[in-house]
Length: 365
Length: 258
Image (cartoon, rainbow over all chains, first blue to last red; front, side, top):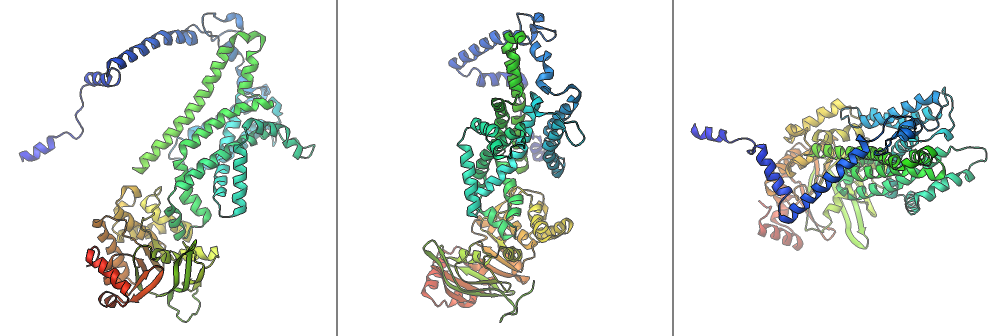
């Protein structure tokens, strides 16, 4: 009986020290393990004390958020008026005022796609259908037609261009990348050769020259009267470009998967597409989530290159604001805003990648 | 499935004058082997003798270059559609189990049924649970393969193959990758399967299992069938010197022989 009590008395979790002791132990091992490290820690702390308050003062406390013109700006702090004053231009571009709700709706739809991805319980088919329809619905909302008044794509600019190119690009690039990766490993020589040729060609040409080709050359191949929208042309280039890189990432994953997986699927009578769709790709995609999301982030940032062929994305709007006579002194603020905008979106994407990886680790162990 | 009226209507597998090369290496030489319904054939031989290649030709994981492989009365050639139909009736267990790691144990057993046989989900689950019960793995139905030991995984692999209600089962060294203490549990499942009358072709080094279960033992060396005999004669009076050498090696080391 006593022996039994002794067994029970052993705590189930390792003993924890009070938090003060833990904090001391932590800082001793992480911050001040030696004289050299201590000096380094102290100088970093000093540096932070010196620059963080100054930066915060300039960015927030002394900054001007409200006002009508450059005259209202406090010269000691940042002036965010070029952005607040031109907010409409940043988000909606030259979109007609009366139709701007369409842009708002499509931005919300794109944003909620990202939110939906976090819901584990959501039916996967529903999610896929949503994602597949999203670019089409967004394009319909933005461009008009079928009940909505048409808006010329010369009016598209700002955030709506960035978000549309980014979202639709990601949604179309992945399936195309998958097909290219499968094609590159196909047993049929013609398909394999075509895929290799395509992937190698696209990967060895800078994306800028592809964009120039899209804006100048595609028109040459089309009948003279057909106007293939410039936004769709650059979108096509971004998709084709990203897909080629994704294909290479996925090919790595396909090659790494043990041969036994293919053999077991074949032995159970799975056909080619079922083997790929139900056995191989789910595993490969899981393994490749981190590099794929990196490419999505890359794609999102590459959308800014469309400026070169005359599509005004958010960077284009920012640049035109920075050279407008009234705001010409406030370039810093404008570019800091741009940096924050891209950081927020790209950081969210990379957090999502991390979330997916963790979810997989949980389901494995 | 209609079995063509052949000379032997109950032949499950008919292999005739089979030749296969890997590059220039002649790995299977004039192999002929018939397996009747309900028969249990054990194929053994030193490593590199072509026994795995032979068994993999039966469901065309390896393609042969010459000769005839006929399964359930249908000749296997390049015709893919027919091949998938045949493969669904030929179960196979691999040395490394090859369970699908992204699916639970249960899903491993139901997906092939729903996807390839068109069995309704509920029926597939019922059949899968029944067979998992038979291999004593029902309690683990909702785990992932990586959470289980090798012996458990191999038993699940057997259940998964049986879910397709195959007419023939192929085993390609099912116990070679297992720790010694797990070999028995897999052999036990295989033995009970044999007692139920399943047609089985096993590549294995487990001579105790072979002696107990096999109707015939086929000994291969260097791509040829050297000897084919019922177990009593195979173990007590092997004809070929190569068989004698192989058996003496196995028994001297005393590894798997009883």
